[in-house]
Length: 522
Image (cartoon, rainbow, N blue to C red; front, side, top):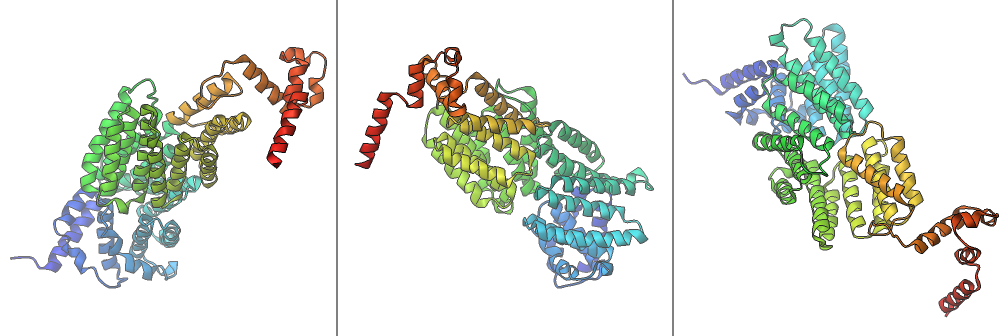
């Protein structure tokens, strides 16, 4: 006897509930994708707890694999529930709000998402005072932390991730291990995609490695390959950031790139958003290996993917990577047109940027391209704009200050270069990113070698040139009386005639200056 549609839905819902409770997200998706027709029956408004629970199960499963349908399963209910007072909301209504908040989060509407998460948290805390709901609070705190993470409030985000782990751990206290997989899954998310991602983003790479290693252990008890592979992506990204490949590729980098290849191959077919982000990190890996053609091909696959508009961050990053690749080709081939292409890609990155981090990365990419074109003043404006936008992010501060120091040196403004470098030194504790460390070392060497560097970055060995430049600097920095003291000029190997010339006091210099004013007037 063939089961009716209602019976099939009832069986499906029970299966989803069992799978999600067991931390079996892959199993839940396998059940649902066999027959997505159930989604067609989701219509109208309802605040019935039983129906809301079913919708939340569907939304949780769909969100796991990045399906757009997840956004519409509970959205109308969320709009209705958000208008009710927290004391009127049940646990299922709170979960519905969380899913509706995730719809806003996926659309980069972080303030709207935070508002919904706060209402859900208030309701769950009230419910928790009567009957424990640690699992729901773990989920709510994790989502609240994600929204703050995207707004670059890293201390606030970390506090919510810590609360999430606490509640998930508390939920395991009175249960046998086989009933705790969903809570281990919850802890893995908070540890890896929460705290671990922040450690990676702020270049605290040793700390990030610990978080990702812990999360990978927790994931061994759960059946959620999409999430496991996504954690592997960021673990590999940490390795790439930590390893210096200036002397050639090493074992850890090759292993990380291979891990990214495998993760991308799986994720692009299961969760396109995760897959696109894996492709971005894979392109970075190819750049690290010096394989610019492979990096360019991978970045272009991101831009040509049918779902790329659903993930503006990956789209922005792909343009930034192409900008970086063009700059690399420009240096390798001595082709200035590559810098023009790099600039164009940086502008495209800023056009699609939908969050502050993407805008900052776009500004930095544009600044780098302008620097290579010799447009130093414009380059400085870009790095200053990026620094202003990311002033609360320690990694952004470090990168922008070092870039500014590099441009100021190219513009022969050594004092400003040294000031930017020193500002980086003050706040550099904990930065383990190889790119940051490499750029800082290069700048330290250049600042140490001499006070002035000519445009192409090589040292000028003309003694008379440096004698004049040192004199110009002294005249600008010191009171002229100090230079008239006995012995001062001898110590500097500058005679009185040279001093007059530097100051512009000799007759020949005065005549030249007077003639120039006359010519200008004419």
